[in-house]
Figure 1 (cartoon, rainbow, N blue to C red):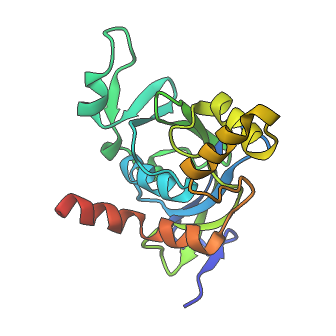
Figure 2: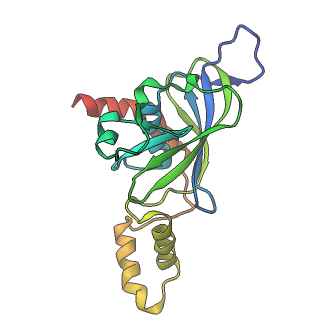
Figure 3: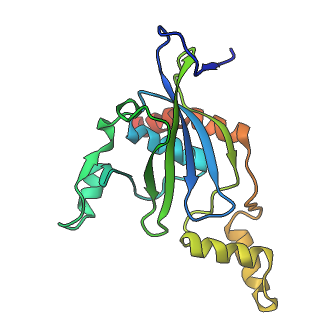
Length: 212
């Protein structure tokens, strides 16, 4: 069944979804995804949706930074914080419907404190979708996210340089990086169908892991 999206709505149509743009900071050309996410989605659920959309593997800690406050897994994040760090709030207690409906509301999603991948999350517009969405979907995007544990933005740029244009004495390192990154890393690759499938199944996959 086709999904109909309406932004010009009669008064009786309920707003039930939000257009979200997720972009990786400090990478040019940008790595980004555009998602349609149910308005009742919690930040804890949004974490898994972003992981699936960007292509990360959920192998590291994360948090949301919103208005100077941090949201995430309280037990995990509190154990890592110093006394003068910002208090951590439970990401399960905040839903996308709690945010301002004004277009352009944005906040940060931080993944992997070592590599420090920072993402800008923009709530572009609130929608009335028929039928009401049960899962998030990915509708647009560009470029592949960096490999896990590549060393942040500086490590990623060096990785690409050696992969694409190695110095004569770096050929062996190039072979190593090709093997380490799966043998076929392409920074320009983006498969919308594959990404959308991963996004649609992100929460179901997490529930299955939690129950096993």
